[in-house]
Image 1 (cartoon, rainbow, N blue to C red):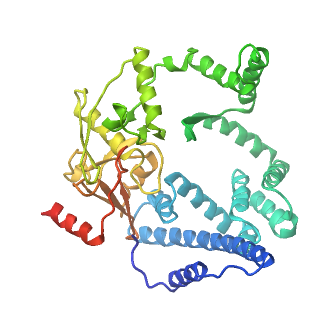
Image 2: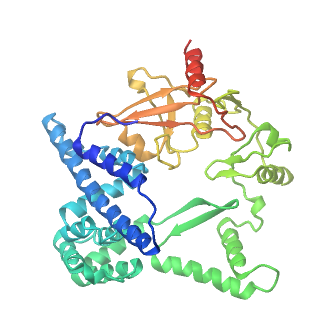
Image 3: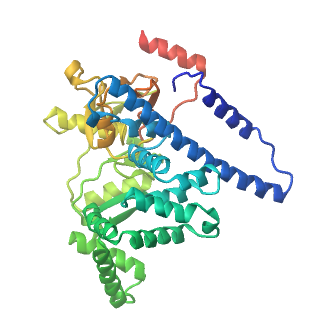
Amino acid sequence: MSATTDDVGVVAVQQMLSALSEMAPASSETDTIDQIAALESLKAACAATQAKQTIRLEELRVEAESAAGVPVARQGRGLAAEVALARKASGSAGGRYLGFARAVMREMPHTRAALAAGVLTEWRATILVRETAHLTPHDRGEIDRRLCADVSVLEGVGDRALDAEVKRLAYELDPQAVVDRHAHAVKDRRVSTRPAPDGMVRLSALLPLVSGISVYAALKKHADATVGADDRTHAQVMADALVERVTGVADVDALPVAVNVVMSDEVLVGHGGAAAHVTGYGPVPAATARDMVATSLDADAATTLRRLYKAPSSGALVAMDSTARLFPTGLKLFLDLRDQSCGIPYCDAPIAEYDHADPHAQGGDTSAANGGGMCLAHNRAKQNPGWRMTTADHTDTARHTATVTTPTGHSHVSRAPAPPGHHDEPVSLIERRLRALLDAA
């Protein structure tokens, strides 16, 4: 839900959206290709205008906060998260985009012009911005001029080739800056996971050049010497060797790791087929979830069963059995299971902090109704002036919701996901309103 507006620009954009949705199919293959190309150019032009409006928002916000006496160091805080909500993106993506808009609008006029003319895609503009971020404005402007003043220079150049060319020019203009960037990048080394199809996980490691190549070479050398000893492929041997060398355990099922698996009672006893949910991963088939439980029991691993209670109609999680003695620990676990990820709309980041919607300093309760889990970026953003969060606790017909309102008055609503095995019943608008009245009574 967004604030109402009479802005001519917004109305014009909405009319363009309506016209595009009503566009008739092309009459020939040639016309189809021409329309695809024209629409790609339109997307680029929209990206340029969006960057311009983003910087205008920043200017207006700084002006307003300066007039209100906000210290310079605090001006514009939370702006990236606000832009991210408008773009239906995560908080981290909002921060990256704000940096992109600043660079394109203030330091790279040729890139901006090519984007506005529709001859440079937003992704290719992002490559130019990203790979010149460590340079001085003068050197960044020089690369901008060399590559985008005459857009024919980029005709037929692929994304990877463009990335390499920008890196080459950067090193030519300021080799020390490139060396310093590489040295600083070492601090960003990390390991992460993200879900993959079919019950798999992608384990990624961002490592310094020599370290990363050495790890891969060691695994490959082991696989070269091992493959053929059994029916595993070369890739499977490398994957198994990685697990064993990192954990010290050859049998994956014996790894001493806590995994929260949420499933309906029907799935647990073997009569249901609804998907279960693994915290930090996502949905898994019922059979896979039962196998995980059975494997843990067979391996004599410590296995704890907690009952989660849900409202019959809405599926809202309302309570949980817990063996924990301290209430905050149990409450955090309940919020993890209820919300599953950051409670701000469009953000899929893992929960890192727990906070009150109605601030504790203003009398807000430490409760499931008033609490929520958020990523670090969004929890910091909502502390800034002009941000407000309200919650609506679960009812028999609705799950827990959180509404965040930004300084511009725009509101965005997130709703707790349905627990495994629950399916919302289709209801009419009249039924929904009647249920809401009954819940409020």
